[in-house]
Length: 95
Ligand code: SF4
Image (tube, rainbow, N blue to C red; front, side, top):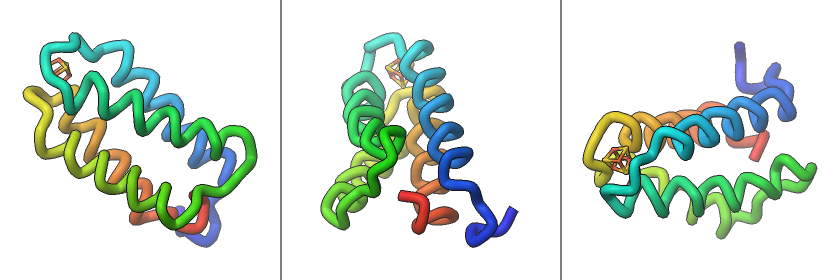
């Protein structure tokens, strides 16, 4: 799927569903995963409600995702952070 063909609702739902899965699996042993994923999900709720993120919010989510992807102790958090980074870079217009 090309980023220009992407249905914003589908991409936002993909992000929401994946973050919900990571949150459910997060054991709380490390802060980047436990807290960072919740912070990202809180910002993405705005997209779920039909609004776009501001430039500052996008930058914050990108930084949080990078921190989670690099700083989480195991694959649950690392994959979660990297997937968010990937969605942001592939579908910038959705967010
Ligand atoms: S990254 Fe792994 S160790 Fe850290 S909170 Fe998530 S599930 Fe637990």
